[in-house]
Length: 97
Image (cartoon, rainbow, N blue to C red; front, side):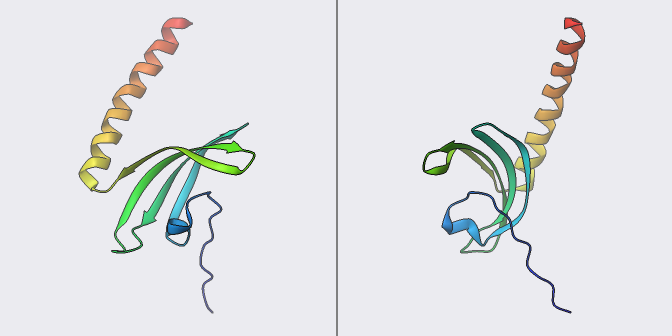
């Protein structure tokens, strides 16, 4: 039995289209779409993570922001900062109540 390749329908450039290894939509509302993608570099094959924000236009989805992480240390640092900042969001929400 042959495994079918997983297909992703994220609006990345043709350069990366066949190199998406995994992806998750964070939000897709109205004209905005945010996602985190696991990509492979087309030349080296090395994996990296990109956070995307697209805007829907008359011509289709256009990249408005993109941020890539290439090293595990970068990922750990960003995750740690996000967890720290998330605690502040939680605390702010409780003080509003």
